[in-house]
Image (cartoon, rainbow, N blue to C red):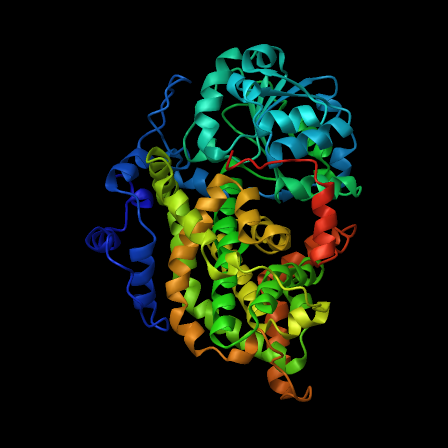
Amino acid sequence: LGPPSVQPNTHLLRSVHADARRPAQHARTTAASDATMIIARVVLLPVAASALLAAAPATRRPATALSARTNYYNTLSQADKLNQLGRCRFMDRREFDDGIAAIDGKKVVIIGCGAQGLNQGLNMRDSGCDVSYALRQVAIDEKRASFVNAQGNGFTTGTYDELVPSADLVLNLTPDKQHTAVVSEVMPMMKQGATLAYSHGFNIVEEGMQVRDDLTVIMVAPKCPGTEVREEYKRGFGVPTLIAVHPVNDPEGKGLAQAKAYAAATGGDRAGVLESSFVAEVKSDLMGEQTILCGMLQTGSVLCFDHMMERGVDAGYASKLIQYGWETITEALKHGGITGMMDRLDNPSKLKAFDLSEELKGIMRPLYVKHQDDIISGAFSSGMMADWDAGDSNLLKWRAETAETNFEKTPAGTMDISEQEYFDHGVLMVAMVKAGVELAFEQMTAVGMKPESAYYESLHETPLIANTIARKKLFEMNNVISDTAEYGCYLYDQACKPLLADFMKAVDPTTVGVKYNTGDNGVDNKRLNAANAAIRAHPVEVVGAELRGYMSDMEAIASGAEANAQRAAGLEWTATSNQL
């Protein structure tokens, strides 16, 4: 079945094949072996045939061949794997003194006009770039959302045939599942020496897309949803961004200069840019979005809401506490890291949140290990692509199930909740955020990713994703994120909910929905000092303190229904990328 790095876990495969059609068994969450059993039975591993595809050697193939997928990462030597996973350099702002010069006067054609496509294009146009949108003829004829987005914002639009041949840079900002078809169609139209750009390297790394030798291939990946790319730019700031050049496609040596200019055009240079690799971006991005960024927030929302309902908390209050609570809690995370978030709690509540987070980390660690292992080996991608080929069978089923959760169907109440009340009544939510951030960071760095990259894909992006839940709950989050992130989110949620079943039955009911500490602020000083020291010493806090120093221009985001309505009214896009 190929080299060890891509061989499927055979004893887990046997468990999956035997039990794939049976309900997942609840297990004692304190036992790692039983936790692994639940994970194996809920997270469906790809079949052996998918592993064979992932392990196949890389070969040049015609651009129009859509059937054969070759995992690029798995064709690398172990030394090259480690080298590319460890690519991460925080770039000095002076490296962007030339601004957009490398692409100034160049014709930029964007394919894809959803959340990332439109909002990146708006920023680039405002920065002085010549931007237009190439759409499928059917999207123009039927006036689909992509056409409405582009035309409604005053952009030139046309078909691939009309715009791609003259483009100097073609930005592929379509959903991941469309990348192979789109790139295969437009590549023959691209002129000699043009540049193909991505904002996520899945197509290159996991599908092994082979690009014409004369074309430069770069990546500029803003570390947040497209809506926030625009909102931060409009404030005169930007969002942290990863840039990379595909090493086998830089024939003229211009890739890095163009990637820097592209990042400057979207505003990324104002918030900090990491020079990375396609491999590091993909593997870290998949891990972050599946676990803490989307999966943990979805699982936490559903479980905390149901827990409050079982204990008689008002449904409207519980719904509002969760919908707007994630955003409020993680705002403290954005500006002060886990330390700042935990410091918003009184002493007894802080110690309780610390203890809960340690318990949660013990329960969930096997799940995080499995997600990271499957991402590194290519097992996750093979499984997801098999679902693409099956017409998104699992994705659509899980999306429908999410829409039917009690949290999603219960409107937020009209009562006022103060900023501090979200913390005081959300101790369990704080613990979930802390546990998820730390676990994701730990697993990414354990496989060779640099702490800076792991920080952006865990702690930094969490408040940006939480903002989307505040708009329209889990529907909005899963609408705005990529199709790949949505699939990974559901995959995590399917495994994590049963994994935490026993924990939720036993958890103190006063840790969510009501004020935990109703007494004084007194605690044992030794315990408090030990907890504070452990929080501050975690590696995500060490690197975070440095990186946040580069983002001193960050502004607080007002929370609550009124603030979100105001932000929503200002958005310039009408539909998102992954569900068009």
